[in-house]
Length: 410
Image: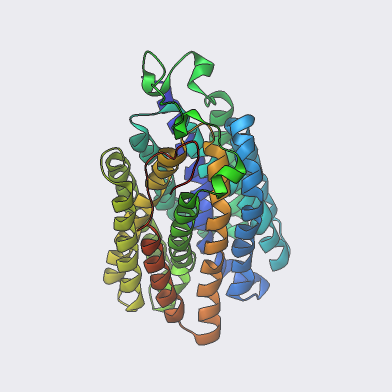
């Protein structure tokens, strides 16, 4: 077996825990933390939104370090940060402390274990089958999303939210850190290998994206950078905004807490299928069309939720949202590699992350404020659909051919 699949496994496990908790499991903490500290929903969600802004500042610094130092080393630091943040959250004595750890520690761990390091590692180890490998690695977020609400919800029911977080921290220490330390390697050349397990290095066309090292000014002068960044940013705004408020939204409509958690798991399970499908398709079809399909699925899912439907109809909305999430990550990674190559992959991903963070920052807070002020999530849901429409329009002028040395087109 090609050792690159061990790298995929490492990224899978890291994102299983990191994204499984931060994106899918966190909403289970809102009710118990709100009740214990007498806080508003916005008091808790502001940590998530503030973390997005902190990530926006840190990502451009992290990206070049991933290229020049070690994506593996950064991921290890991220796992340590996740572990320590879970412990600190469980020991918090006020909603301020809780939200501060979310804004700094959880967002930092999410950045270090997210696409900048994970997609960079996978893209280095694969070439002709990069889309499929990125899709498989990204299913870690879906499997984590499917299982984390169920497992963490059970732990919270048995041990309380503090005990549940401490047990999760123990799992990170036992399962994530050893794999990253002993199993992951930065480059196939470190083990005397070539991408895809080939007998020689892939042929690189001179003056193509794959043959050059991009500087930060080069990247930001390229229109494709802005088009990809804002299109993904608006899509993430809608997706994260819905996901972070879905548990509360469903229970307010009369859905039992366990069933509301199941809706989140359904999104993750559908995302697993979507990532495999979109990942394989990314090697064969137009990446623009692939992302447009993800936009359409997300818009239909949110429109379904906006009807304030019964639980069975909410399941349909969850499936649509999950399939949309399945399209985002592998297509995003393949787009960056197609346009900019892999030599500066970390730098480009790091520069795109601030755009995504700034765009998605209002998502969780918009849902919370909509509910706190109006008693309804309708305003937020309609805003999310508008954001997705803008995301789709931004892809129209995007060129996905590799950018030449003069970087004068998008």
